[in-house]
Length: 217
Image (cartoon, rainbow, N blue to C red):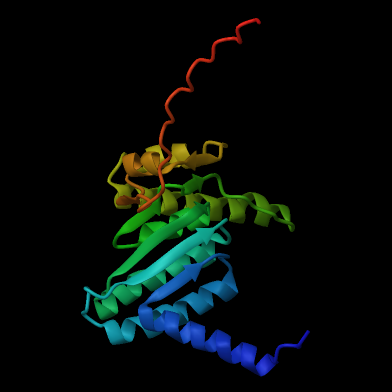
């Protein structure tokens, strides 16, 4: 088996990335510091040539199990900043699933859509902490309250469905809220459900003729 040339592989990846940038497409999977930085740089490069050309939207495809709250909010801030600075349209599309912070990032789109087979999930913030009592029970409690207020207010404003207090109770209920496309549309979490096109549909078969038992000879 021929060992692939590393230089060729890198060149192929770069060419594919340039092609995606040219078409205005970005795919979100992990949400952490490295991916948030890459996202910010890519969205900037896509926005500059699309200044005031809202008929050429950037599309952010999300297939994510979630990640860091701070990094996810940074990605949303970048979308908002590019929208204000360059007057571009940035849409979000959920592919398969967008859980936790992935679901929150999806709300930043001008037009938010989800496939018929997609799922969103919202749940309470998860923390792994160590340190002094004051930091854990006071400082991080204050940060948690800040995140709850920020996210609940975001959902209330973006969905125009219920108020901040309702969304706070809904998300921080101690449950994992798995939501199908119809529920997402009802709650105002998406603007459109993308139905599958040309999906083969099975046809019902006529009932088999009833066979009479053989006549004894």
